[in-house]
Length: 200
Image (cartoon, rainbow, N blue to C red; front, side, top):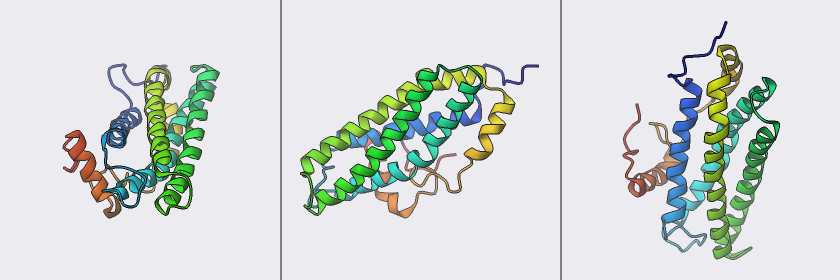
């Protein structure tokens, strides 16, 4: 018996991942377009850059990408995803996790004028943002459609319990953590998304 949900209804976990992708795109857009976001302690709103990287290395890298890796591994076990695609998704996540932590360290050093130039760090941050954008597009083309087609209720139950978060998204959930309040307002102003309103 086929236990998959009807094709007209996407599983709630996939819907959640897609919603998080939209939120991450708003953050990436801010990093790309805000001219004041520079790795320089004297630059206007320099703290936003620190908060953005802190968020990226503490939430997507730890929870969002880990869930996508479990989906990819489940698809691989069902022979529903090319092994090379699975390996590429996991490699992208591992690479971004390493680069995010390196950027956080370099940013802190540049703001104290102890390491590489602030211009180089700013350029590397924008490159990291572009890699994140590419990763999301890759998953939406390859991973998510395969999951919607091939995973049944037992698969989602196996993935789901381990996917539950101990804490909500500190930046985009309705109760924004105080640390990220300024960044949240900046994203809302830049994108015009209305995300300064609680999401239902």
